Length: 341
Image (cartoon, rainbow, N blue to C red; front, side, top):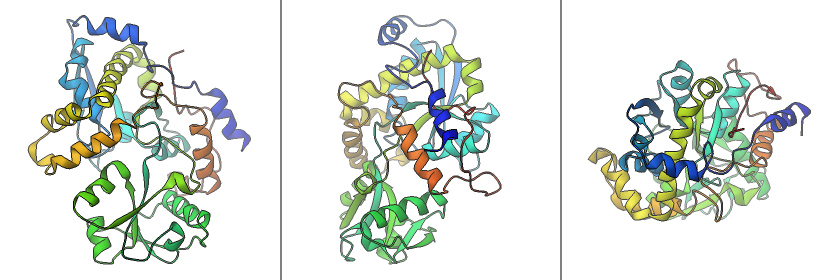
């Protein structure tokens, strides 16, 4: 492991317990309603889905209000991503990916992961079951539908090689719905979240095969994460403590009550957001078992997860700066994850 990257890990304060606040403090906060409500803007990384359930639960249960917070959930926009809104001061907390955090650090616009929404990576690759694809090695020479990023090339190439293939494939930019692209043979496979796309495909009767990336040598990592900036942490630490206490309650409730949590998510969004309610319930049942490891608090982040996957991407030359140059290391001055001192 490169020395410069080790310095990052040595300097990191690992997130533990209930993140910014203990359960005892959390319970005290819940017992009283603050007189003055502080505005907190939270920006999503996509349309509302079961990755976000804990936030909607905390809002519906008035746990944010009890903490003295008026939380507004901002919709995702490709023109105003969480990273942009956080650095512009228009959002206080966002939902983001590990790759985005590393890219931000590489471009000296640091973001900090303040919680892992899901305890382990639940993504992988989906293909149709009638195309003769029995293992990722069969992706050799096939058409991958994606976005053409270096991260995709690194991940896909690695799982093919780790399965006995050469790692060569063609990257096709998706211009239509991915499952439609599969059926029309415009692509042969694509990257999905097991807790949503795989469930959706099977509910719709598609004959699909799924290959989790963790089964083929890709280091485990957190995705998605709750993120903010060092500046916001410095200026609004107490507000973030309150926000994280209520949010922790939301995800803990969702973990223990998947059906009720799914209904809250549905009720808290426009009717057209979830045309297939069965998908929401199935997805919530899946993720409620994966928000946290047994016996550990929600949101916990471990040092190993922030060593191996980032180093894998650096070794694969998959992290770029704003000019498209390969980043070999990340400054030790860029915080990535945090807990209360």
